[in-house]
Length: 146
Image (cartoon, rainbow, N blue to C red; front, side, top):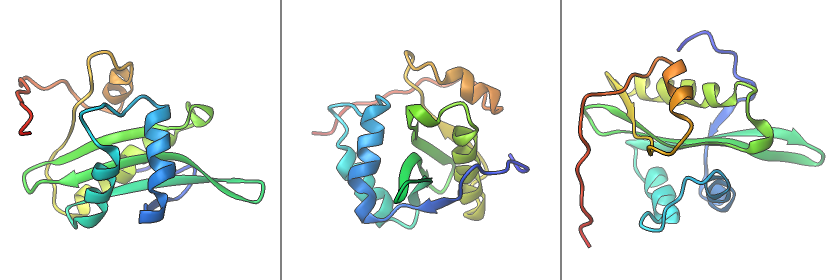
């Protein structure tokens, strides 16, 4: 996705960003009771195979979190999780910038492919399709281990 001018610079989240990032995920309806977002965030930062990228915008007296994306490389393909843009900052190119940042991070690690899962009820499917992602002919199977 080269050529996108980022509306704001993306940086790697730090442990101290956890509460603000998780609050954003919750405000965007991305959390579910069976996934512990605190654990997800901490694991992403603890592993060299994953990260959380954040976008901050200037506000009076400092900066505010405007968006975030979690990305990771499993050695076979890159994955994107928790792409979130604060409601007041949508439709300004920030989602595209976050995806471009995730793709760049994955390319640096040699990921040949990027994938993500979107819940059926999520209206973001059209956004991802506009970015060139295609529906895959796979069935996702799973079960909880606990």
